[in-house]
Length: 429
Length: 85
Image (cartoon, rainbow over all chains, first blue to last red):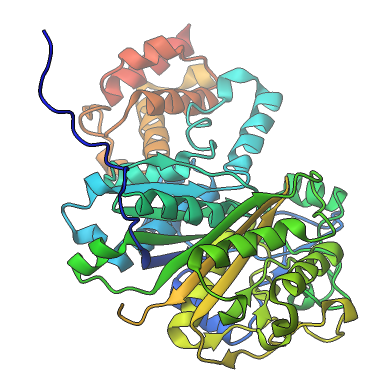
């Protein structure tokens, strides 16, 4: 029988894009198990790096790391599950709950149907997988836990958060190595812009201070060998940098449509106005030395926002403290900002946090957001021996008060992923 | 030796292993406690429990048998039967 009723209009056609704002923040880092503690330590120029304590690293080339300390997963998830879950999941759940609580959505009874989750990770629950594999090899298949799969797969961060807080919106995990957290925020922005969801819990988590990862990243010549003075091991842009410092943690934001945030009367931290995402298409670990990928990501973010490059008041660089990566990012910034670059403060907070792998992208986005809120720019510490090839204003060693309107955060990952996020200070409109 | 364990020893062992795996206080794990209704156990955790019991008592607890067990006492009886087998 023919149905003569008019079809509903396709809702994406001629629809005005939603503006996207940040209404909640949460983090677990080597510098603190809350946002405010982490931020205070970053502004104070403190290092979260110390000797590796999670295992005996005596025979490893790199013996320093940024470990999360004094964190009790039982406070955030069912202890029965916490006992078997990977720390990446512990950190995810804690940071996500903090961000949701901060946003006010936890007490909003209508939130569930219209909120989604996108928590990225670079390696997921590798620790659980390695541990279970060890048991398997030693004792055989009967001892392998039935929780191995759910508590090691990359998407369980997003899955667990949705289950715990009853969030029925879109749910997935983005993996783009060390850009994962930034990709998660950027792709979530698109979902809110087109109106398919009201709010997204977005970010990333990783827990890679593991024997296999320390050994493997060292074998790839990616990790520092500055073992004698851990707090000085991560030194982005400095002439004596020789590799990144592995660290761990999670950083999560609540992104929300401006209309939803206004309707709820939520506190708005900043507006996400630009997102660039592209690929080097060049090499599995090394960046394209021309800087073209990083440049394109920054340009896309700035063009999406419709601003002039020189309006960017602060860049939180990806700069991991590797000789090549930092240099290439500077090359890209010189092309992006030209003669204006000397006037644009650029810092790498990895000098203090170490490299939180997938979570680096989201914690550094948060630092950009808080820099806008507080008009206070975090420094790059361990600036002792200037590298002539990194001749930029790195906000050396001491934080700086400065009124800014736009903050850009860069994130790059193995595989050639390049992501830039651009935030605008929230001024009430 | 395992075959010298009394039924009381086995019951206490099952209660201790259950309390540890399920992260509940020992006094909450009584002989009459039902795994699903009282201790909030799903099928995944029954297997996790069986693995821990196998380790504790050096026995083999087939998964299908463990899944049919309803109470802590029944689990202790299952373990005892494997110990004397």
